[in-house]
Image (spheres, rainbow, N blue to C red):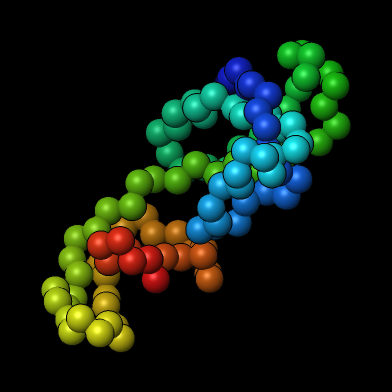
Amino acid sequence: MIVEATYVACTESPYRVQQKEARHRDKNELCLQCDNSPASLKPEIVPFTISLTGDFQDTLNSLSYRYYLPTRIFAISPRYGPKDGETRVKVWGENFLNFDENTRCAFGSKSV
């Protein structure tokens, strides 16, 4: 599936998880912003390729793009804890992906 892309102002380095977007004055590079990815009915890894001419003959390599099923939560225990935090919480569900140190939980506006 081929989708359209648009040139946008960006920074030299890609963002890290939980990193705020740079201010407009700090965006001094040009990047491509792709339209929404096509839907997939199953989890899979597909090649992601960019072509500036549209025929993909100008492409030398690609990177992997991962489709995954939406995460579903069935239960959380305990259901409450002290306001000072430090409570270990267990979550049961399906389709969790292991992102190591980038895995996060949010309690209201707090992300841990």
